[in-house]
Image (tube, rainbow over the protein chains, first blue to last red):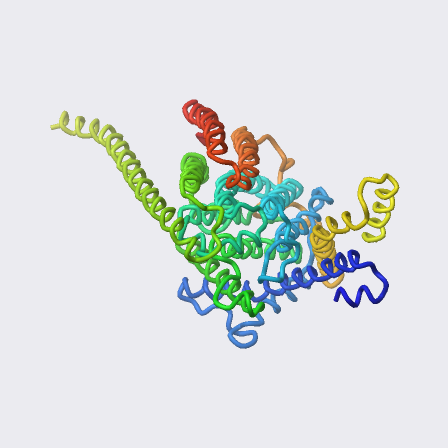
Length: 397
Length: 144
C-alpha cells in the first residue's frame, strides 16, 4: 500500500499518512458490519434467557434479521415535531455513533493491526467515550418533550457519576503496564491482569454497564416511568443510530475489558500468525459481552437514589482504596519494571491476587454488617408502628 | 482537502522554522487515522439520515408533529425548572474528574518515581479523603 502510494509520487511520510487514513476506514466499516451480527447475537442470547427462540425467520437461524430491520427502519417515516431545536436534534444521533466509532481507532486488533497506536490511548478512550453523554443531553434537551428531558437529566447524572470509578479503575492497568498506549498494555500482559486485579475488573464492568445504560442501570430508558427515554421523539433511522450507538458502546466495553484485563489478542501462536490474534480478541470480547447480557437479563432495575448512592458511597471509595492498595503493593515488590515473561509475572500476580482476595473478603464483611444494621433499623421502625395498634386493642378489651 | 490543508500548515511551519516537514508528518500520521475515522463516521451518519429522508414517506399532519405525551395534548414548554440535585451531582463529578486527571500522569510514570511518588500521592489522597468524608458528613452525597 505504502509502496503504491510512493509510486504515484507521494513522499514516504505522506504515503504512510494516507495509508493509515485508509486503513482505519476498514476498521470503521468492520465496526458497522459487526453491529448487524452483534445485534443478532444479543437478541438470540436474550431470547434464550427469557425462554424464547429469538429471531429465526429471516435467513438461516434468523441471521439476516438485522439486515431486514435496517432496511425497514431506513424506509420509515422520519417524524420531527415542530418544536424541536433542529441542529442539536439532528446532530445528536450522529454524535452518539461517532463517539463510539472513534474509540475503535485505538483498538489493537492483533500484534500488527492497530489504527492509531497513540501514546495517550487510554486518555483518548476516556475523552472520546464521554462524548456520548453530550449526545444524550443534546437529544433530550432539543426534543422539547418532558419525558425526554427527564430521561436526559437522569442519564447525565448516571453517566457522569459512573465515569469516576470507571476511570479510576482504568488507572490500574495503566499503572501496571507503565504506559497509556493500549497496545503496550496488551503486550505487558504476560499473565492477564484479570488474575492480578479481579477487583478492578469488577469495578470496571459494573461502572461500564452503568455507562452503557444497560442491565440493572437502565434508568434512562425506564419504559414504565418515562416511556422510552431521551430518544422518544426520534423515529426511523435517527432512532436507529441511537440503537447502533448503544449496541456498539456495549460491545466496545467488552472489547476494552478483553484488551485491558484479559490479554487482548494474546494467546498461543498469536505473535507468529497475526490474524489468529484477531480471533482471540473476538472470542474474549464475545465472552465478556455474554456475561454482560447475562447480568442485564437477570437483575431488575434499580432506583435512582440507590443508583447514585451505590456509586458515590460505595464504588468511588472502593475504587480509590483498590487503586492505592495495588499501587502500594506494586511499589513494595522488587523488579516490577522488568517483567518480560510468564515466569517474571507469576510472583507479582500471586501477591496482587492474594491482596484482592483479602479485599473481597473485607468488602463482603462490610456489606454484611451494613445489611444487618439496615435490617435492624427497619425492624425497629416496624416495632414502633406496630405497638400503638396493640395498645389500642388492649384498651378495647 | 484535509491533506492539502495539512500541507499548507506544513509550508507555514517551514517558513516559521519551527519544525521540519518529516517530524510534523510523523506526528500527523499518528492522528491521521482518527481524523479519517471521524470524517468517515460523520459522512456515514449524514448519508444514512439523508437516505432515510429520501426513501421514507413524508406525510406530516398537525397531530403527528406535536411532542409525544402519552396521547394527551401537550401543555407548555418541556424545558422548565429542574431539581438542583442534578447540578450537585455535576459539581461532584467535576471535582472527582479533576482528581482523576491528576492521577493519570502519575500512574504512567509510577514505576520511575521511587517511593517519593507514592508518598506524595498518598498525601494528595489524604487531602482528598478529608474533603470526601466532609462532603459525606454534611450530606452532599444524599440524593433526596
